[in-house]
Length: 470
Ligand SMILES: [Zn+2]
Image (tube, rainbow, N blue to C red):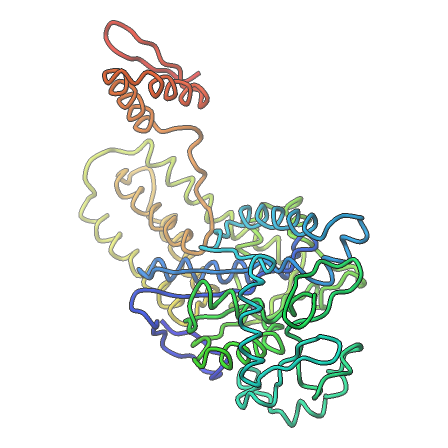
């Protein structure tokens, strides 16, 4: 499996630190509003990376933060006259709903900045102790960028080039910096803002320090993959490297992955330009599986253009897969049972080529565009060879192949069966009988209620327990 590493600007063979395990950190959103479709791209892309790695048998520890203290959150809280925590909690919940609708799995861990302040104080303290950071007169703690000799290695900038843009880096209120390249680790509180006590001043953390701290806490000093949108390369990820490597004395992340921008109608998305869409806006018009399909139809490192026409094309593409799976299901339901014919076995082996193509594309830096093309070839093959004369076994095997590959991309192409399966119901009835035998009537009753809630009615008869759907 090869991954394009922003650090080396090359595709590199992926070798995890610990065999069979992947430690992966993906920078999450700042939660002050509903997420927009630009936020959705890294979520979908890196969820797909995770799914593919799991498909290859790797165990992925996937950590993604929510930035829940930030100027924008505070601004919104002031506007609404509520606590900042009210705003961040609300939008974390909304974000999770969108993620679910896009079939983005929850991370192994979703840490919150406000719950990791102790770790940030530790790391900042260490950096101050080592001379990598200093406190200015007003209590702000800055990272002394020039002391970290490798600064610029990720964004491939050198300090002298940055020096040229020095002035623009001097943000107002940061006049007490020793050097324009220095960045904030901790800043004093302002009136009405949330704050925490620290050895330097009552205040709150800078943005960059949270990821360094959460990554260390949940994944260790050294991790396999750190990922996010390409707008994070500089300065966010560059600063994370400086903080972590200075504090821990170890390589922070081995592979740095960045997804490219999303444009709308060939222009940068912006509220002022009127071409700004939240994921919720899109969900009013499309199933979010279509948005997911659209995002994966391009390679993650290619800029992606969002337009009404392209979304329609994505809808057609996605539906082609769904329809094929539905047809195979229908045909299998009416087909002859029994073994596959020799010819069918041969065809099924041939269909294996599309799976190999899919894997080859994904192994090449997660080329989802080519991987989806392989799914389409498989769909075409299934539509050609699966018909009324096919055996149920053959039709089902074809369907399962399509569903499996789609599932690696996180595309839900098969409608989940409504309600409970017969086996599940019968299992619970057996458990209820055992509970009654053991005179555990509370549990027996609980099971009866549980089934009733799902529309299953039990009847105790002389011949035993009978059940029916309501
Ligand atoms: Zn981050």
